[in-house]
Amino acid sequence: MASINQNALSNGLPDFRNLGVIARVLIGVHVLACGAMLAAASGWDDLLDRLMLAAGFIEPILLASLLLLVVLSPMLNRLHFVAGAGVVLVLVLAVTALAYDGVARVFGIPVGAGLVQALLLATLATLLLLGYLRLAIKAYSPALAEARLQALQARIRPHFLFNSLNAVLSLIRRDPVRAERALEDLADLFRTLMADARQFVHLADEIALLERYASLEQLRLGERLRIVWELDAAPSDAILPPLVLQPLLENAIYHGVEPSTEPAEVVVRIAQHGNRLRVLIENPFSERHVHHAGNRMAIENIRERLMLFFDAEARLSARIEGQRYIAEIEMPYRPAPKPRRGAAAGARQEA
Amino acid sequence: MLRVFIADDEAPARARLRELLGDIGAELPTQLVGEARNGIETIERLPESGAQVLLLDIEMPGMHGLEVARHIARLDEGPAVIFVTAHDRHAVEAFELNALDYLLKPVRAARLAAALTRAQAVGAPSAQTLETAAEQLRETDGRGRTHFSLTERNRIVLVPVNEVVYLKAEQKYVTLRTREREHLIDESLISLERELGERFVRIHRNCIVARDAVRGFEREGASEDEEAHWRVVLDGVAERLPVSRRQWAAVRALVAQP
Image (spheres, rainbow over the protein chains, first blue to last red):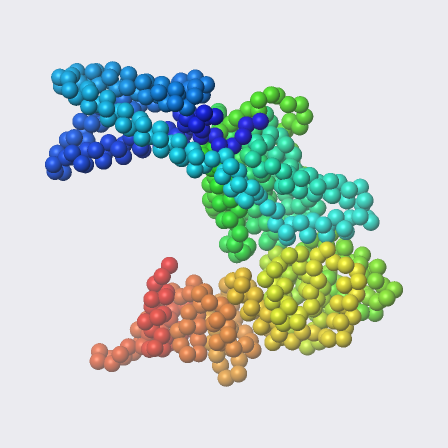
Protein backbone atom coordinates (compact mmCIF):
# COMPACT_ATOMS: atom_id res chain seq x y z
CA MET A 1 0.00 0.00 0.00
CA ALA A 2 1.15 3.50 -0.73
CA SER A 3 3.18 5.08 2.00
CA ILE A 4 3.35 8.73 2.94
CA ASN A 5 5.74 11.34 1.54
CA GLN A 6 3.94 11.87 -1.70
CA ASN A 7 5.99 14.75 -3.03
CA ALA A 8 9.13 12.78 -3.75
CA LEU A 9 10.01 9.84 -5.93
CA SER A 10 11.99 6.99 -4.47
CA ASN A 11 15.27 8.23 -5.96
CA GLY A 12 15.19 11.65 -4.29
CA LEU A 13 14.04 13.56 -7.32
CA PRO A 14 10.92 15.67 -6.84
CA ASP A 15 7.62 14.29 -8.15
CA PHE A 16 6.85 16.78 -10.91
CA ARG A 17 3.21 15.73 -10.95
CA ASN A 18 2.74 16.95 -7.41
CA LEU A 19 0.97 20.29 -7.12
CA GLY A 20 3.21 21.43 -4.26
CA VAL A 21 6.35 20.74 -6.32
CA ILE A 22 4.94 22.55 -9.36
CA ALA A 23 4.02 25.54 -7.22
CA ARG A 24 7.50 25.62 -5.66
CA VAL A 25 9.16 25.51 -9.09
CA LEU A 26 6.96 28.30 -10.45
CA ILE A 27 7.51 30.52 -7.44
CA GLY A 28 11.22 29.69 -7.27
CA VAL A 29 11.95 30.59 -10.89
CA HIS A 30 10.03 33.85 -10.61
CA VAL A 31 11.79 34.83 -7.41
CA LEU A 32 15.19 34.10 -8.99
CA ALA A 33 14.28 36.07 -12.13
CA CYS A 34 13.04 39.06 -10.14
CA GLY A 35 16.21 38.99 -8.04
CA ALA A 36 18.42 38.95 -11.11
CA MET A 37 16.51 41.83 -12.73
CA LEU A 38 16.59 43.85 -9.55
CA ALA A 39 20.36 43.48 -9.40
CA ALA A 40 20.83 44.43 -13.05
CA ALA A 41 18.35 47.28 -13.37
CA SER A 42 19.45 50.93 -13.22
CA GLY A 43 16.11 52.40 -12.17
CA TRP A 44 12.41 51.67 -11.72
CA ASP A 45 11.51 52.23 -15.40
CA ASP A 46 14.45 50.14 -16.49
CA LEU A 47 13.44 47.40 -14.04
CA LEU A 48 9.92 47.32 -15.48
CA ASP A 49 11.23 47.06 -19.03
CA ARG A 50 13.63 44.31 -18.08
CA LEU A 51 10.92 42.39 -16.25
CA MET A 52 8.61 42.56 -19.27
CA LEU A 53 11.32 41.39 -21.60
CA ALA A 54 12.46 38.66 -19.22
CA ALA A 55 8.90 37.43 -18.81
CA GLY A 56 8.69 37.00 -22.57
CA PHE A 57 11.65 34.63 -22.41
CA ILE A 58 11.12 32.93 -19.10
CA GLU A 59 7.42 32.04 -19.21
CA PRO A 60 7.51 29.91 -22.37
CA ILE A 61 10.70 28.17 -21.25
CA LEU A 62 9.41 27.56 -17.74
CA LEU A 63 6.00 26.29 -18.78
CA ALA A 64 7.31 24.09 -21.60
CA SER A 65 10.00 22.57 -19.33
CA LEU A 66 7.49 21.88 -16.58
CA LEU A 67 5.05 20.30 -19.01
CA LEU A 68 7.79 18.06 -20.33
CA LEU A 69 8.84 17.06 -16.80
CA VAL A 70 5.24 16.30 -15.83
CA VAL A 71 4.91 14.03 -18.86
CA LEU A 72 8.27 12.34 -18.30
CA SER A 73 7.96 12.07 -14.52
CA PRO A 74 7.38 8.24 -14.46
CA MET A 75 10.47 7.73 -16.60
CA LEU A 76 12.58 9.93 -14.32
CA ASN A 77 11.48 7.76 -11.44
CA ARG A 78 13.50 4.85 -12.83
CA LEU A 79 16.79 6.73 -12.96
CA HIS A 80 19.43 7.24 -10.32
CA PHE A 81 19.32 10.70 -8.71
CA VAL A 82 22.40 12.08 -10.54
CA ALA A 83 21.32 10.63 -13.89
CA GLY A 84 17.78 11.93 -13.32
CA ALA A 85 19.07 15.40 -12.45
CA GLY A 86 21.21 15.29 -15.57
CA VAL A 87 18.22 14.40 -17.74
CA VAL A 88 16.22 17.23 -16.18
CA LEU A 89 19.04 19.67 -16.88
CA VAL A 90 19.44 18.52 -20.49
CA LEU A 91 15.70 18.79 -21.06
CA VAL A 92 15.56 22.29 -19.60
CA LEU A 93 18.55 23.40 -21.70
CA ALA A 94 17.05 21.97 -24.89
CA VAL A 95 13.78 23.73 -24.21
CA THR A 96 15.67 26.93 -23.41
CA ALA A 97 17.63 26.81 -26.68
CA LEU A 98 14.52 26.16 -28.77
CA ALA A 99 12.34 28.69 -26.99
CA TYR A 100 15.09 31.31 -26.98
CA ASP A 101 15.43 31.03 -30.71
CA GLY A 102 11.66 31.38 -31.23
CA VAL A 103 11.22 34.25 -28.81
CA ALA A 104 14.21 36.12 -30.18
CA ARG A 105 12.70 35.95 -33.64
CA VAL A 106 9.36 37.28 -32.37
CA PHE A 107 11.09 40.19 -30.64
CA GLY A 108 13.46 40.70 -33.56
CA ILE A 109 16.56 40.34 -31.38
CA PRO A 110 19.64 38.72 -32.99
CA VAL A 111 20.38 35.27 -31.59
CA GLY A 112 23.96 35.44 -30.39
CA ALA A 113 25.79 35.87 -27.15
CA GLY A 114 22.40 36.13 -25.43
CA LEU A 115 21.81 32.42 -25.96
CA VAL A 116 24.86 31.38 -23.94
CA GLN A 117 23.75 33.72 -21.17
CA ALA A 118 20.27 32.23 -21.22
CA LEU A 119 21.64 28.68 -21.11
CA LEU A 120 23.88 29.54 -18.17
CA LEU A 121 20.98 31.17 -16.30
CA ALA A 122 18.75 28.17 -17.01
CA THR A 123 21.45 25.80 -15.70
CA LEU A 124 21.82 27.88 -12.55
CA ALA A 125 18.08 28.03 -11.93
CA THR A 126 17.61 24.30 -12.57
CA LEU A 127 20.42 23.24 -10.25
CA LEU A 128 19.34 25.64 -7.53
CA LEU A 129 15.75 24.38 -7.64
CA LEU A 130 16.75 20.72 -7.77
CA GLY A 131 18.97 21.32 -4.78
CA TYR A 132 16.25 23.17 -2.90
CA LEU A 133 13.64 20.51 -3.60
CA ARG A 134 16.03 17.79 -2.48
CA LEU A 135 16.57 19.67 0.78
CA ALA A 136 12.83 20.17 1.17
CA ILE A 137 12.27 16.45 0.64
CA LYS A 138 14.88 15.68 3.27
CA ALA A 139 13.23 18.07 5.70
CA TYR A 140 10.01 16.14 5.18
CA SER A 141 11.87 12.88 5.21
CA PRO A 142 9.72 9.83 5.87
CA ALA A 143 11.21 9.30 9.32
CA LEU A 144 10.44 12.85 10.38
CA ALA A 145 7.02 12.88 8.76
CA GLU A 146 6.18 9.56 10.37
CA ALA A 147 7.19 10.82 13.78
CA ARG A 148 4.95 13.84 13.30
CA LEU A 149 2.11 11.66 12.08
CA GLN A 150 2.32 9.45 15.16
CA ALA A 151 2.20 12.52 17.36
CA LEU A 152 -0.78 13.84 15.43
CA GLN A 153 -2.64 10.56 15.55
CA ALA A 154 -6.24 11.33 16.27
CA ARG A 155 -7.30 10.84 19.84
CA ILE A 156 -10.79 10.10 20.97
CA ARG A 157 -12.12 12.37 23.69
CA PRO A 158 -12.02 10.70 27.13
CA HIS A 159 -15.49 12.16 27.61
CA PHE A 160 -16.73 9.88 24.82
CA LEU A 161 -14.90 6.81 26.13
CA PHE A 162 -16.22 7.01 29.67
CA ASN A 163 -19.76 7.89 28.67
CA SER A 164 -19.78 5.01 26.18
CA LEU A 165 -18.52 2.55 28.79
CA ASN A 166 -21.20 3.82 31.14
CA ALA A 167 -23.86 3.29 28.47
CA VAL A 168 -22.61 -0.25 27.83
CA LEU A 169 -22.75 -0.99 31.58
CA SER A 170 -26.37 0.10 31.62
CA LEU A 171 -27.15 -2.36 28.81
CA ILE A 172 -25.51 -5.46 30.21
CA ARG A 173 -28.51 -6.57 32.27
CA ARG A 174 -31.33 -5.25 30.10
CA ASP A 175 -30.03 -6.04 26.64
CA PRO A 176 -26.90 -8.19 26.73
CA VAL A 177 -26.83 -8.67 22.95
CA ARG A 178 -26.74 -4.96 22.28
CA ALA A 179 -24.13 -4.55 25.00
CA GLU A 180 -21.95 -7.11 23.27
CA ARG A 181 -22.29 -5.33 19.96
CA ALA A 182 -21.44 -1.99 21.54
CA LEU A 183 -18.28 -3.41 23.11
CA GLU A 184 -17.29 -4.88 19.74
CA ASP A 185 -17.79 -1.48 18.14
CA LEU A 186 -15.71 0.13 20.85
CA ALA A 187 -12.96 -2.45 20.35
CA ASP A 188 -12.91 -1.81 16.58
CA LEU A 189 -12.75 1.90 17.13
CA PHE A 190 -9.80 1.62 19.47
CA ARG A 191 -8.01 -0.88 17.26
CA THR A 192 -8.15 1.69 14.47
CA LEU A 193 -7.04 4.48 16.79
CA MET A 194 -4.02 2.50 17.85
CA ALA A 195 -3.20 1.26 14.38
CA ASP A 196 -0.37 2.48 12.21
CA ALA A 197 -1.17 6.07 11.30
CA ARG A 198 1.12 6.07 8.28
CA GLN A 199 -0.78 3.79 5.94
CA PHE A 200 -3.54 4.74 3.58
CA VAL A 201 -6.86 3.01 4.32
CA HIS A 202 -9.83 2.06 2.18
CA LEU A 203 -12.76 4.43 2.17
CA ALA A 204 -15.15 1.50 2.66
CA ASP A 205 -13.36 0.59 5.92
CA GLU A 206 -13.32 4.22 7.00
CA ILE A 207 -17.07 4.42 6.41
CA ALA A 208 -17.61 1.22 8.38
CA LEU A 209 -15.67 2.80 11.23
CA LEU A 210 -17.82 5.94 11.03
CA GLU A 211 -20.92 3.77 11.35
CA ARG A 212 -19.55 1.91 14.36
CA TYR A 213 -18.72 5.18 16.01
CA ALA A 214 -22.15 6.58 15.14
CA SER A 215 -23.93 3.58 16.62
CA LEU A 216 -22.09 4.10 19.92
CA GLU A 217 -23.10 7.75 19.98
CA GLN A 218 -26.64 6.73 19.11
CA LEU A 219 -26.66 4.45 22.11
CA ARG A 220 -25.84 7.36 24.41
CA LEU A 221 -27.86 10.09 22.78
CA GLY A 222 -30.85 8.14 21.46
CA GLU A 223 -33.26 10.21 19.43
CA ARG A 224 -31.36 13.41 20.11
CA LEU A 225 -28.96 12.32 17.37
CA ARG A 226 -30.10 11.83 13.79
CA ILE A 227 -27.48 11.12 11.15
CA VAL A 228 -28.24 11.42 7.46
CA TRP A 229 -25.80 9.37 5.40
CA GLU A 230 -25.35 10.49 1.80
CA LEU A 231 -22.94 7.93 0.46
CA ASP A 232 -24.42 7.03 -2.95
CA ALA A 233 -21.59 8.70 -4.83
CA ALA A 234 -18.84 7.50 -2.50
CA PRO A 235 -16.16 5.53 -4.37
CA SER A 236 -15.65 2.57 -2.04
CA ASP A 237 -12.34 1.70 -3.73
CA ALA A 238 -10.78 5.06 -2.83
CA ILE A 239 -7.90 5.18 -0.39
CA LEU A 240 -7.31 7.99 2.07
CA PRO A 241 -5.28 8.76 5.21
CA PRO A 242 -6.63 7.00 8.29
CA LEU A 243 -8.91 8.66 10.80
CA VAL A 244 -9.55 11.94 9.07
CA LEU A 245 -13.31 11.38 8.90
CA GLN A 246 -14.10 10.06 12.37
CA PRO A 247 -12.72 13.10 14.26
CA LEU A 248 -14.87 15.33 12.07
CA LEU A 249 -18.00 13.35 12.91
CA GLU A 250 -16.99 13.36 16.57
CA ASN A 251 -16.64 17.13 16.41
CA ALA A 252 -20.04 17.46 14.76
CA ILE A 253 -21.71 15.44 17.51
CA TYR A 254 -19.78 16.98 20.39
CA HIS A 255 -20.38 20.57 19.29
CA GLY A 256 -23.61 20.27 17.35
CA VAL A 257 -25.70 17.62 19.09
CA GLU A 258 -24.65 17.22 22.71
CA PRO A 259 -25.14 20.86 23.76
CA SER A 260 -28.64 20.94 22.31
CA THR A 261 -31.77 19.88 24.15
CA GLU A 262 -33.59 19.47 20.86
CA PRO A 263 -32.97 16.55 18.47
CA ALA A 264 -30.25 17.52 16.00
CA GLU A 265 -29.38 16.33 12.53
CA VAL A 266 -25.86 15.62 11.29
CA VAL A 267 -25.24 15.14 7.56
CA VAL A 268 -22.38 12.98 6.29
CA ARG A 269 -21.83 13.30 2.55
CA ILE A 270 -19.01 11.54 0.73
CA ALA A 271 -18.77 11.81 -3.05
CA GLN A 272 -16.35 11.57 -5.93
CA HIS A 273 -16.12 14.57 -8.26
CA GLY A 274 -13.89 13.65 -11.18
CA ASN A 275 -10.51 12.91 -9.70
CA ARG A 276 -11.34 14.53 -6.37
CA LEU A 277 -12.85 13.01 -3.27
CA ARG A 278 -15.11 15.29 -1.28
CA VAL A 279 -16.28 14.74 2.27
CA LEU A 280 -18.75 17.03 3.95
CA ILE A 281 -19.95 16.85 7.53
CA GLU A 282 -22.61 19.28 8.64
CA ASN A 283 -24.13 19.91 12.04
CA PRO A 284 -26.44 22.48 13.62
CA PHE A 285 -24.64 25.45 15.05
CA SER A 286 -25.84 27.80 17.72
CA GLU A 287 -23.78 30.56 19.19
CA ARG A 288 -25.45 30.02 22.52
CA HIS A 289 -24.17 26.48 22.80
CA VAL A 290 -20.56 26.89 21.82
CA HIS A 291 -18.73 24.09 23.59
CA HIS A 292 -15.43 25.12 25.10
CA ALA A 293 -12.32 25.19 22.94
CA GLY A 294 -10.87 22.09 21.37
CA ASN A 295 -12.64 22.28 18.05
CA ARG A 296 -9.94 24.23 16.31
CA MET A 297 -7.31 21.82 17.59
CA ALA A 298 -9.04 18.85 16.02
CA ILE A 299 -9.39 20.73 12.74
CA GLU A 300 -5.74 21.81 12.77
CA ASN A 301 -4.67 18.27 13.55
CA ILE A 302 -6.57 16.82 10.57
CA ARG A 303 -5.34 19.62 8.34
CA GLU A 304 -1.71 18.89 9.22
CA ARG A 305 -2.12 15.17 8.63
CA LEU A 306 -3.72 15.81 5.25
CA MET A 307 -0.76 18.03 4.45
CA LEU A 308 1.72 15.30 5.35
CA PHE A 309 -0.08 12.85 3.06
CA PHE A 310 -1.06 15.08 0.17
CA ASP A 311 1.00 18.28 0.50
CA ALA A 312 -0.94 21.05 -1.27
CA GLU A 313 -3.40 18.75 -2.98
CA ALA A 314 -5.81 18.35 -0.09
CA ARG A 315 -7.89 21.01 1.58
CA LEU A 316 -9.92 21.17 4.76
CA SER A 317 -12.29 24.04 5.29
CA ALA A 318 -14.67 24.76 8.13
CA ARG A 319 -17.34 27.41 7.89
CA ILE A 320 -20.59 28.56 9.43
CA GLU A 321 -23.56 28.98 7.13
CA GLY A 322 -26.57 30.37 8.95
CA GLN A 323 -27.47 27.81 11.58
CA ARG A 324 -25.18 25.07 10.22
CA TYR A 325 -21.51 24.35 10.81
CA ILE A 326 -19.91 22.74 7.78
CA ALA A 327 -16.56 20.95 7.64
CA GLU A 328 -15.40 19.93 4.20
CA ILE A 329 -12.39 17.94 3.02
CA GLU A 330 -11.28 17.78 -0.56
CA MET A 331 -8.48 15.42 -1.53
CA PRO A 332 -7.26 13.60 -4.62
CA TYR A 333 -9.25 10.51 -5.49
CA ARG A 334 -6.86 7.57 -5.49
CA PRO A 335 -8.26 4.17 -6.27
CA ALA A 336 -6.88 1.24 -4.31
CA PRO A 337 -4.35 -0.85 -6.24
CA LYS A 338 -6.62 -3.92 -6.30
CA PRO A 339 -10.42 -4.05 -6.14
CA ARG A 340 -11.45 -5.50 -2.82
CA ARG A 341 -14.42 -7.54 -1.84
CA GLY A 342 -16.61 -6.51 1.04
CA ALA A 343 -18.39 -3.51 2.38
CA ALA A 344 -19.59 -1.38 -0.48
CA ALA A 345 -20.90 1.94 0.60
CA GLY A 346 -24.57 2.42 -0.08
CA ALA A 347 -27.04 5.01 1.04
CA ARG A 348 -28.14 4.62 4.59
CA GLN A 349 -30.55 6.48 6.75
CA GLU A 350 -30.09 6.55 10.48
CA ALA A 351 -27.57 4.31 12.14
CA MET B 1 -35.90 5.76 52.70
CA LEU B 2 -33.60 8.32 51.19
CA ARG B 3 -35.39 10.30 48.46
CA VAL B 4 -33.16 10.59 45.38
CA PHE B 5 -33.51 12.62 42.20
CA ILE B 6 -31.49 11.77 39.06
CA ALA B 7 -30.51 14.40 36.47
CA ASP B 8 -28.64 13.23 33.36
CA ASP B 9 -29.16 13.91 29.68
CA GLU B 10 -28.27 10.37 28.59
CA ALA B 11 -30.99 7.74 29.09
CA PRO B 12 -28.49 4.87 29.58
CA ALA B 13 -26.70 6.85 32.27
CA ARG B 14 -29.98 7.38 34.16
CA ALA B 15 -30.80 3.69 33.76
CA ARG B 16 -27.41 2.75 35.17
CA LEU B 17 -27.88 4.93 38.26
CA ARG B 18 -31.35 3.44 38.84
CA GLU B 19 -29.82 -0.01 38.61
CA LEU B 20 -27.11 0.85 41.10
CA LEU B 21 -29.62 2.35 43.53
CA GLY B 22 -31.43 -0.99 43.34
CA ASP B 23 -28.21 -2.90 43.96
CA ILE B 24 -27.37 -1.02 47.14
CA GLY B 25 -31.00 -1.06 48.32
CA ALA B 26 -30.39 -3.66 51.04
CA GLU B 27 -27.63 -1.64 52.59
CA LEU B 28 -29.11 1.81 51.95
CA PRO B 29 -32.80 1.92 51.02
CA THR B 30 -33.62 4.71 48.59
CA GLN B 31 -36.66 5.95 46.76
CA LEU B 32 -36.38 7.51 43.32
CA VAL B 33 -38.58 10.62 43.39
CA GLY B 34 -37.82 12.18 40.01
CA GLU B 35 -35.66 12.37 36.91
CA ALA B 36 -34.68 15.13 34.52
CA ARG B 37 -32.86 15.28 31.19
CA ASN B 38 -31.30 18.73 31.46
CA GLY B 39 -30.65 21.56 33.85
CA ILE B 40 -33.84 23.53 33.25
CA GLU B 41 -35.97 20.42 33.70
CA THR B 42 -34.13 19.66 36.94
CA ILE B 43 -34.88 23.10 38.31
CA GLU B 44 -38.53 22.81 37.30
CA ARG B 45 -39.14 19.35 38.71
CA LEU B 46 -36.90 19.08 41.72
CA PRO B 47 -38.69 21.41 44.20
CA GLU B 48 -41.95 19.45 44.33
CA SER B 49 -40.24 16.05 44.29
CA GLY B 50 -39.13 16.49 47.88
CA ALA B 51 -35.75 14.97 47.03
CA GLN B 52 -33.12 14.79 49.76
CA VAL B 53 -30.26 14.00 47.40
CA LEU B 54 -29.70 15.13 43.82
CA LEU B 55 -27.43 13.05 41.57
CA LEU B 56 -26.45 15.74 39.10
CA ASP B 57 -24.60 15.15 35.83
CA ILE B 58 -22.60 18.24 35.02
CA GLU B 59 -22.27 17.91 31.22
CA MET B 60 -25.87 18.50 30.25
CA PRO B 61 -27.18 20.56 27.35
CA GLY B 62 -28.28 24.10 28.05
CA MET B 63 -26.90 24.59 31.54
CA HIS B 64 -23.79 23.33 33.34
CA GLY B 65 -24.48 21.19 36.40
CA LEU B 66 -22.68 23.57 38.72
CA GLU B 67 -25.00 26.39 37.66
CA VAL B 68 -28.00 24.12 38.24
CA ALA B 69 -26.73 23.51 41.76
CA ARG B 70 -26.35 27.24 42.37
CA HIS B 71 -29.96 27.90 41.41
CA ILE B 72 -31.21 24.99 43.48
CA ALA B 73 -29.33 26.27 46.51
CA ARG B 74 -32.04 28.98 46.72
CA LEU B 75 -34.58 26.46 47.93
CA ASP B 76 -35.36 26.60 51.64
CA GLU B 77 -34.87 22.89 52.12
CA GLY B 78 -32.69 22.08 49.18
CA PRO B 79 -31.25 18.64 48.57
CA ALA B 80 -27.69 17.50 49.10
CA VAL B 81 -25.93 17.46 45.75
CA ILE B 82 -23.64 14.75 44.38
CA PHE B 83 -22.11 15.75 41.06
CA VAL B 84 -21.51 13.15 38.40
CA THR B 85 -19.09 13.56 35.52
CA ALA B 86 -17.43 11.41 32.88
CA HIS B 87 -14.35 13.51 32.47
CA ASP B 88 -14.39 17.19 33.24
CA ARG B 89 -10.94 17.86 34.64
CA HIS B 90 -11.66 21.51 35.42
CA ALA B 91 -14.90 20.81 37.22
CA VAL B 92 -13.31 18.02 39.25
CA GLU B 93 -10.60 20.45 40.36
CA ALA B 94 -13.22 22.96 41.47
CA PHE B 95 -15.14 20.24 43.35
CA GLU B 96 -11.99 19.05 45.10
CA LEU B 97 -11.02 22.55 46.18
CA ASN B 98 -14.42 23.18 47.70
CA ALA B 99 -15.04 19.75 49.20
CA LEU B 100 -18.07 19.15 47.00
CA ASP B 101 -18.83 15.48 46.48
CA TYR B 102 -18.65 13.99 43.03
CA LEU B 103 -18.74 10.62 41.29
CA LEU B 104 -16.90 9.60 38.14
CA LYS B 105 -18.68 7.71 35.37
CA PRO B 106 -18.87 4.77 35.18
CA VAL B 107 -20.04 4.92 38.80
CA ARG B 108 -19.29 2.07 41.20
CA ALA B 109 -22.04 0.82 43.55
CA ALA B 110 -19.83 1.04 46.63
CA ARG B 111 -18.76 4.57 45.83
CA LEU B 112 -22.38 5.61 45.24
CA ALA B 113 -23.46 4.16 48.59
CA ALA B 114 -20.67 6.00 50.37
CA ALA B 115 -21.53 9.29 48.67
CA LEU B 116 -25.24 8.94 49.52
CA THR B 117 -24.48 8.15 53.16
CA ARG B 118 -22.21 11.13 53.38
CA ALA B 119 -24.76 13.37 51.63
CA GLN B 120 -27.39 12.34 54.14
CA ALA B 121 -25.15 13.47 56.97
CA VAL B 122 -23.79 16.64 55.42
CA GLY B 123 -26.92 18.01 53.76
CA ALA B 124 -27.19 20.71 51.12
CA PRO B 125 -24.01 22.53 50.08
CA SER B 126 -23.93 26.19 51.02
CA ALA B 127 -24.62 28.75 48.32
CA GLN B 128 -21.29 30.33 49.19
CA THR B 129 -19.34 27.13 48.50
CA LEU B 130 -21.06 26.70 45.15
CA GLU B 131 -20.37 30.32 44.19
CA THR B 132 -16.69 29.89 44.95
CA ALA B 133 -16.50 26.65 42.96
CA ALA B 134 -18.29 28.28 40.04
CA GLU B 135 -15.90 31.18 40.13
CA GLN B 136 -12.91 28.84 40.04
CA LEU B 137 -14.41 26.87 37.17
CA ARG B 138 -15.07 30.08 35.26
CA GLU B 139 -11.41 30.97 35.50
CA THR B 140 -10.35 27.69 33.91
CA ASP B 141 -13.03 27.09 31.30
CA GLY B 142 -14.33 30.63 30.81
CA ARG B 143 -18.05 30.00 30.95
CA GLY B 144 -20.30 32.18 33.04
CA ARG B 145 -23.89 31.66 34.10
CA THR B 146 -26.71 31.46 31.58
CA HIS B 147 -29.56 32.37 33.95
CA PHE B 148 -30.50 34.41 36.98
CA SER B 149 -32.79 32.83 39.49
CA LEU B 150 -35.15 33.91 42.21
CA THR B 151 -37.57 32.05 44.39
CA GLU B 152 -41.31 32.49 44.38
CA ARG B 153 -43.21 30.41 46.92
CA ASN B 154 -40.33 27.95 47.13
CA ARG B 155 -40.20 27.51 43.37
CA ILE B 156 -37.28 28.68 41.32
CA VAL B 157 -37.93 31.20 38.56
CA LEU B 158 -35.21 31.44 35.93
CA VAL B 159 -34.45 34.54 33.87
CA PRO B 160 -32.07 34.00 30.94
CA VAL B 161 -29.07 36.35 31.05
CA ASN B 162 -29.69 37.43 27.45
CA GLU B 163 -33.14 38.77 28.36
CA VAL B 164 -31.75 41.16 30.93
CA VAL B 165 -31.70 44.85 29.95
CA TYR B 166 -30.08 46.22 33.06
CA LEU B 167 -29.16 45.44 36.65
CA LYS B 168 -29.40 48.18 39.23
CA ALA B 169 -28.35 48.07 42.85
CA GLU B 170 -30.96 49.27 45.31
CA GLN B 171 -30.78 49.32 49.11
CA LYS B 172 -30.49 45.62 49.83
CA TYR B 173 -31.28 44.02 46.51
CA VAL B 174 -30.42 44.26 42.87
CA THR B 175 -33.22 45.15 40.47
CA LEU B 176 -33.12 43.01 37.36
CA ARG B 177 -34.99 44.54 34.43
CA THR B 178 -36.11 42.57 31.38
CA ARG B 179 -38.26 43.98 28.57
CA GLU B 180 -41.33 42.51 30.24
CA ARG B 181 -40.86 43.04 33.93
CA GLU B 182 -38.74 43.70 36.96
CA HIS B 183 -37.36 41.23 39.48
CA LEU B 184 -35.48 41.64 42.71
CA ILE B 185 -32.49 39.37 43.22
CA ASP B 186 -30.26 39.09 46.24
CA GLU B 187 -26.81 39.15 44.71
CA SER B 188 -24.12 41.77 44.75
CA LEU B 189 -23.75 44.00 41.71
CA ILE B 190 -19.97 43.88 41.94
CA SER B 191 -19.73 40.11 41.74
CA LEU B 192 -22.39 40.06 39.00
CA GLU B 193 -20.40 42.54 36.97
CA ARG B 194 -17.32 40.38 37.35
CA GLU B 195 -19.20 37.24 36.37
CA LEU B 196 -21.03 38.66 33.37
CA GLY B 197 -17.94 40.33 31.99
CA GLU B 198 -18.00 41.80 28.52
CA ARG B 199 -21.69 41.45 27.85
CA PHE B 200 -22.54 44.21 30.31
CA VAL B 201 -21.17 47.69 30.75
CA ARG B 202 -21.18 49.82 33.88
CA ILE B 203 -22.90 53.16 33.35
CA HIS B 204 -23.13 54.29 36.94
CA ARG B 205 -21.89 53.36 40.37
CA ASN B 206 -25.11 51.44 40.92
CA CYS B 207 -25.99 50.18 37.46
CA ILE B 208 -24.79 47.89 34.65
CA VAL B 209 -26.61 47.54 31.31
CA ALA B 210 -26.53 44.88 28.62
CA ARG B 211 -24.40 46.09 25.72
CA ASP B 212 -26.81 44.58 23.21
CA ALA B 213 -29.69 46.57 24.67
CA VAL B 214 -28.09 50.00 24.28
CA ARG B 215 -29.80 51.95 21.49
CA GLY B 216 -28.13 55.30 21.99
CA PHE B 217 -27.63 58.23 24.29
CA GLU B 218 -29.46 61.47 24.80
CA ARG B 219 -28.31 64.67 26.36
CA GLU B 220 -30.25 65.96 29.19
CA GLY B 221 -30.93 69.48 30.43
CA ALA B 222 -27.77 71.47 30.98
CA SER B 223 -27.21 74.92 29.57
CA GLU B 224 -24.33 75.83 27.24
CA ASP B 225 -21.73 76.51 29.91
CA GLU B 226 -22.52 73.59 32.13
CA GLU B 227 -21.42 70.05 31.36
CA ALA B 228 -24.30 68.01 29.99
CA HIS B 229 -25.58 64.80 31.51
CA TRP B 230 -26.11 61.80 29.30
CA ARG B 231 -28.79 59.18 29.55
CA VAL B 232 -28.84 55.74 28.00
CA VAL B 233 -31.71 54.89 25.64
CA LEU B 234 -32.45 51.19 25.98
CA ASP B 235 -34.13 48.71 23.72
CA GLY B 236 -37.63 47.75 24.84
CA VAL B 237 -37.58 49.83 28.02
CA ALA B 238 -39.02 53.34 28.08
CA GLU B 239 -36.97 54.37 31.08
CA ARG B 240 -33.73 56.34 30.48
CA LEU B 241 -30.82 55.64 32.78
CA PRO B 242 -28.29 58.30 33.76
CA VAL B 243 -24.64 57.76 32.87
CA SER B 244 -22.31 59.04 35.53
CA ARG B 245 -19.72 61.57 34.45
CA ARG B 246 -16.97 59.24 35.59
CA GLN B 247 -18.24 56.39 33.36
CA TRP B 248 -19.16 58.43 30.27
CA ALA B 249 -15.92 58.07 28.29
CA ALA B 250 -15.61 54.34 28.99
CA VAL B 251 -19.27 53.70 28.16
CA ARG B 252 -19.11 55.55 24.85
CA ALA B 253 -15.93 53.72 23.85
CA LEU B 254 -17.25 50.30 24.81
CA VAL B 255 -20.60 50.66 23.11
CA ALA B 256 -19.03 52.01 19.95
CA GLN B 257 -17.15 48.74 19.52
CA PRO B 258 -19.01 46.17 17.48
